[in-house]
Image (tube, rainbow, N blue to C red; front, side):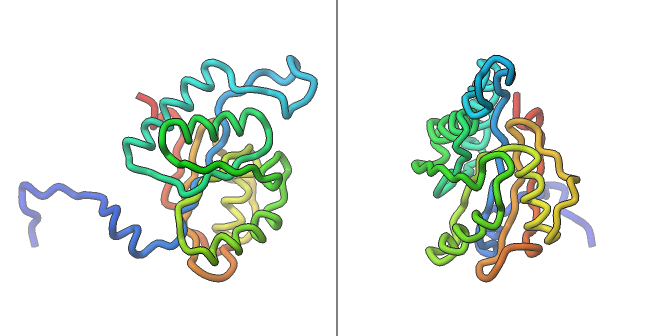
Length: 185
């Protein structure tokens, strides 16, 4: 069997949507100000460089035709600013805050929320939060336990496909893990 000389392999996004259930994007906040300059960690904003890079990455996601029905964000300022940039570029019209996404947040609380999300149907979802939590959550969804192996850089993305029904713990499939430098031009 030979392949025709004009054959170009293509990523079939519609086939992925037909076979997938929930596409979950775990997005780490952009570069933030140094902690010693602020009274509390929750007050740390994105730096100008963090805003610039996050906006470029968000624009690249938009060009890749990625959309979220909802962006769920940590209550910390830098994560909220990251979520707002994603929204401003046109990746979603909705942002909600979740305490489960704060540093050291409990995936169990998010799983309770997710159970209700599943009942509405399978829709793309973005979580904006912090490392090591997002990496650990991805591991839990993939392997049912955290191994501190997945490291998510600032403005990095992990993409998971989660099952349509039941608990997603240990049942996810990773389709994307990228450092921000691969999305910047």
